[in-house]
Image (cartoon, rainbow over all chains, first blue to last red; front, side):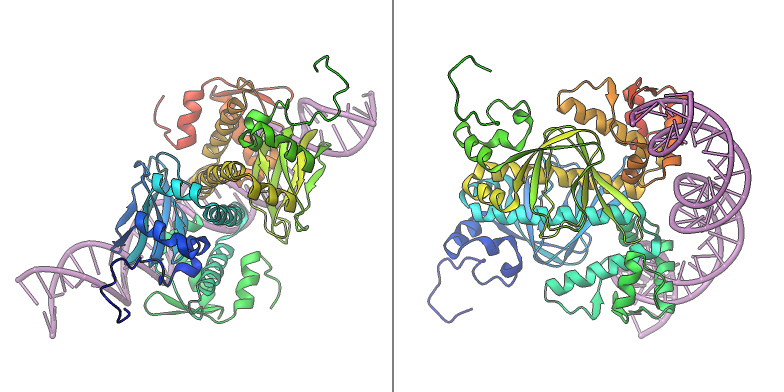
Length: 241
Length: 241
DNA sequence: CGTAAGTTTGAAACTAATCAACTGTTGTGG
DNA sequence: CCACAACAGTTGATTAGTTTCAAACTTACG
């Protein structure tokens, strides 16, 4: 972008807008080139698979734009979405030799792709990166436990409320607008994430609308009119006004 | 144990029977003393709390004997058991400043307790330990995702079958007998782990018994008579004989 | 032994799933 | 540019699996 000379090797990391919220924020400036050397920038169309369920897990990814759903399936086709990933999120923490899950872009998505082995070597070379990854794994584990509680014990309405609240929180963490809340996933994905059916998700949206807690807008957007009430609903405190 | 001299400082780690399956297996011999310096061996009675829900999470633990349940609660008392820990397991991976969960001994239990800060320093000093921890976090994340699928989409019978199979696998990993399978948790704990009620768990045990897949023995033990059938049930392949 | 805790079993009630129809939206090719 | 097809979302009626409530039974243990 600068008006400088031919610029032989401007690595793609130094000026990356996603770096402050990605794993690479832990990598000091003089290590960025080593990262850049090993990554491929990949673009995925909406609906395109990123990781194929059951495939050898040869790569890990850092999502720089767009959004992704990660899912796990039973032999008869029943499916659970185990997580949604956004800009700044890392894909590949839970991988063993063979991927036990699939991942798919929800909208046009960009990611830095690393060969798994090369990434492993990077970790050994850069302890700060490993520490960052452990921190993220720790955080994801906490999130997963929240989700276990949600799936074990919450009602349909509590689940949807928790979900919307979580989406909103994560949008804010990424410094994206939280009021016209955008959700790139369809009802079926939400249902698979919340352990419900599309019909039940739809009915709960209806209840949240008529009770004036949220308002659905065009283009997969929503406005949270009463965040306080939504938070109460999410934790099962139904008594309060 | 050796008939040697007064032996001034025999650290408790060198001859620890749990080391081959604990995080400390990643620590080289000459680092064990540093570990030993920072830990306290703690014993817990059956039912005794190890981590109090909501308390400042000041410690992390390595379980060396016994078993532990980890749980998370809603304000109105609904509860999910997010995991069971056994000999060799690490407690504290998912901790932030304040523990969002409780942990309680299921039977007489022994653990090495580290102050959280001291442990953090150990990690920085010993990259092998950090790598080991990341590997475990990765593995736990996978397990958690399995559990998400279980809670989202499996029937009561499939859940109990998966649970028993998992217990059996983990017992074998610890090199403990898998045939008379021992389970230290009561029905209520299983129910909270599987997102069911004690009554439903009991009814499913009944079905597994009458169909000849398992046999319940005295003293919280069971025999898995048809592991193949149990595995089919766990994955929803009900058709086969 | 006797009590309390845990487990099993039965009947009724309820939440969410299933089945079904209809509406709205998106994208495409005639 | 509109008609159509495919997909997505909503709404209603019915069903089913699990929960809830209740009581009897079993086991562990002081």
